[in-house]
Length: 204
Image (cartoon, rainbow, N blue to C red; front, side, top):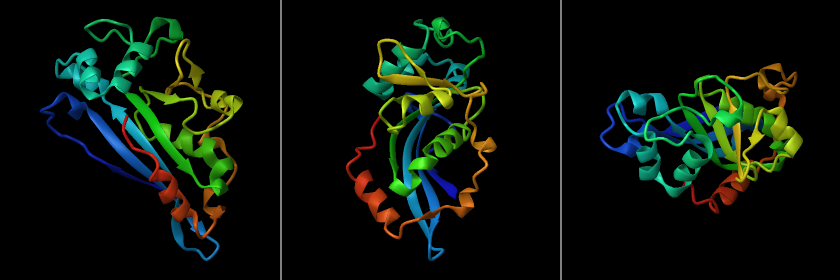
């Protein structure tokens, strides 16, 4: 198993939307014939809060410039103020959060259903430790107990889940005894993923 990430990065932002890095992550596995194939795909946005704040930008204005969804994330997770004061105090942890990861789309071939926690935890760890991940509870179709084992918390009054990426959780992909290289997926896995993905608009 390997992840391939296609994203856009602006080394010198000239627009508020440039503080976001949108990524499409393909999860490659092997078939019984040892042919590599895409068996899962995720749409992930990364908001580099530290970079925006360092450039003197208002987090409120940046989220507002991107989309209504990111304004919802702002209103749901961040202390309301024109200046960035951090994640909401009632979330109950003191670690600084300098970036937000938003997983807003995911397709898994059925052969990967038992690997969804492994993949999701691994995706979260593709980003800096001082970040948090936000996701709708329906994005991956994981059971509540599986999401809880990954560290996702319900946000009161919202469909969003929130996970501080710096905290230890019950489940960790690094401690999973299974070998992802031994995973075999169906010959039509990529066809399935592409078909399911075509129904996803990719916007956040």
